[in-house]
Length: 337
Ligand code: MRU
Image (cartoon, rainbow, N blue to C red):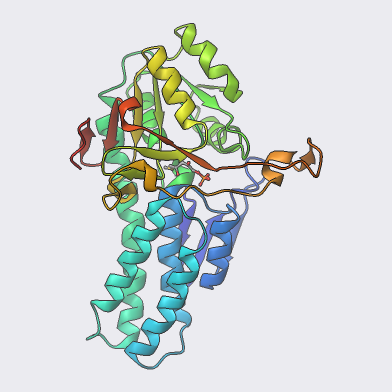
């Protein structure tokens, strides 16, 4: 199994996703500050995976804190939580995990500090284990929506790499493949960071799951030729009304899918749902560096001084989503999560 985030006795290990598919390098983390940098720089990415990594970041902060009182330890944890929360704004799983760790700490004032440190580590591990279980459940619910011989299109990487393991959208793909229902996956390369070609294609190739890589601009003509049976993507944040933020380019696919009458599904765990937002209008959209667009694979392909607009995510209105696949079942509009 691909494990992008794992605890190894006394340290956190992250698979460096910036180096895939060329190199498989695992990195060791002992300090929350380095975990925060790993999230910011996409060593670990994908909404559930950054949530789990951040939870371990808080556990690391607890282990390294020299505090001798509960209040001192909580103050150190709050510093770590603030720093980890400042890394990436869109995926709500990050804030969900940090809040869970905060609640765990505040709920155990009675524990000796060493026991509280152990309790926080156990909580981080629980976020990891629960995420893997949720992904398998989503795969089971999702496979019921997949017709025999399906050609599934996916965008970005919502696979094992983006989660604690197995994946959300790729969980549905894995389950469909295991049941013999999958013809092949159309993998969008996903400009500008190429999560599709670098990461999704790597995951599928590794497991012998049939797939074909396409440039993002190919999706429309494939749908026109009736070569896509359904689209499944992941999500970074789902508002209460079902509006869904996901990797930039997801919204265009949903518009295309509606035009061509192709079902468009989102697969995401409840940790991706943000009930505090009535609609997608309130979802903060991360803007990343200009060089992600000006350069391809480290090579400059645009004038160095050209101004760039580089939003990392867009919002697909709920009206364009056929259904949302979660670990608690398949939801359809009007959404009552
Ligand atoms: O910028 P990234 O690579 O973190 O963006 C990831 C996505 O948009 C995924 O589709 C989303 O996080 C769902 S992952 C199960």
